[in-house]
Image (tube, rainbow, N blue to C red; front, top):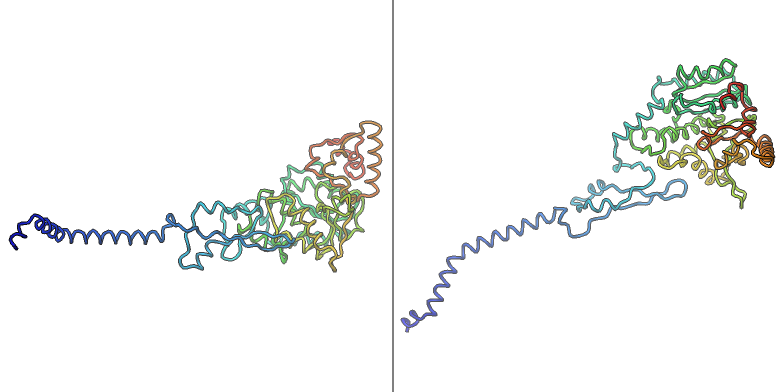
Amino acid sequence: MFQMIKHHPYFHHIKSSVFGFMFLLPTSLFALSLLLLACNGFSVFYMYLPGYIKSSPEPIKLLPENLSGDKTVTKLVSSVMYAVKEENPPGVLKTHLSLVKKPNFSMVPIGKASVFKPKQARLSRQILRTLGSGTKPKGFFSSKVKTFFRNSKCKSRFFMTWISPIESLSDRELLAIESVFKSHPKACLVIVSNSLDSKKGSVVLKPFSDMGFKLIAVHPDFDYIFKNTYAETWFNRLKNGNINPGEVSLGQNLSNLLRLALLYKYGGVYLDTDVLVLKSINRLRNVISAQSINPETKNWSRLNNAVLIFDQNRPLLFKFIQEFALTFDGNRWGHNGPYLVSRVVERVTGRPGLNFTVLPPSAFYPVDWTRIRSLFQGPQNETHSNWLKLKLGQIQRQSYAIHLWNRQSKQVKVQEGSIIHHVISDCCIFCNSLKSKF
C-alpha cells in the first residue's frame, strides 16, 4: 500500500511543494525582515519631516494689547518663543506664514521676540547724522543755549526747527523769522538746525544780528533734549534699529518730537517756519489751537501743533511726548503730529491739574489748508475785493498768527492786493528787499 502511495502522482506533488517551501523559507524571512526595517525607517522620517505632516500645523497666535488712546493693536507671538517652550515643536509649513499680515503700524518687539536689525540701525544712524545728531561735542547744545538765554535777557523765548538743507530756506521762512521780531523785538529765537548752524547759516542770519535781534542756530543734541522723558527710550531704540522710521520723513517726525521736548525742557513758544506772527502773543500761556470746528456741535474737531505755547515741565507736554513714544507710526502722515495732539487732548480734557486752553481756529489757523490759496489772490472784481477787505479785517482783529500751509501754497505767487500781500507789509522788517522777491 505504501508503494502505491509512493508512486501516486498526488504524492509527488505534495513532496515537491514541501521541498520547495523548505528551500525558499530562509529567503522569505530575509525579505520580510527588510520589509519591516523599511517600514520602521519610513515611520521615523515621517514623524520629523515637515513636508510629510498630515495634521494642520499650529497657527501663529495674535494677542491683543491695549495702548494709550483706547485702541487695540496686535502683537505677533514669536515662533522662536514657542519652540523654546516645547521639546518637539510641530513643523510649520512656509505656505502658512504668508497668511499672517504685517500690521500697518510700526511695532517694537518685546523681550525674547525682539530682533535686532543691523541694516535698519545703520539707516537710522545715517539719517540722524544728516540731521546733525552727534556731530558736535557732548554738552555743546546745552552750553550754547544756556549761555544764549543768560546773556540775552529775553523777554520771551521762541523756538523753530529747520531740518532741510540751507539751500531750501526761502524768503518765506525768513519772513517768518522777521514776523517774530516785528511783533516781539525783545524776544530770543533758537533755531534748532544742522544746516543753519554753519558758516553759510551765519551769513543768512547775520542781517538779523546786525539789527540787534537775538537769535542763534544750534545743532540738535537729541540725547540731551530727550533726556529723562519717554522720548529718550524711544530715541535709543531708533538708533539701535528696533524702530522702523517708516516712509514719512524721519526729519519731519523728529521735528514733531523736538518741539514737544524743547518746550518741556525750556518753556516758550514753538512756531513752524511757515507761520507768520501778526501781533504779540506774550500774554498767551499754555495754549494750543484748534485747526477746525465741527459745524454742528461747535466743538473742535482737530487741533494742530504748528504753534504751541507752554511753560516749562507742563504735564500736557509730558503726555504728548509719552504718546509719541508709545504709538509712533512712521508710515502715516500726521499721526505723530496734529493727530497726536488731537487724540491726547480729547482723552485728557476735564482731568484736573493739566490747566491748558484750546483756542479757536481764528487764533493761528484763520484759513484751512484747503482754502489757503484764496489768500494769495488779488481782487478779481468788486465783490471779491469787498470780501478780501472783510477777511483781512477779521484776521487782523482775531488772529495772533497765520499758518501759510506751505505744502499747499509753496509755489503760489503772492498777487498785488491779496490778503497775504497786506500781511507781508505788516510783518516784514526788510520790506524793500522782500517785496521784490514775492
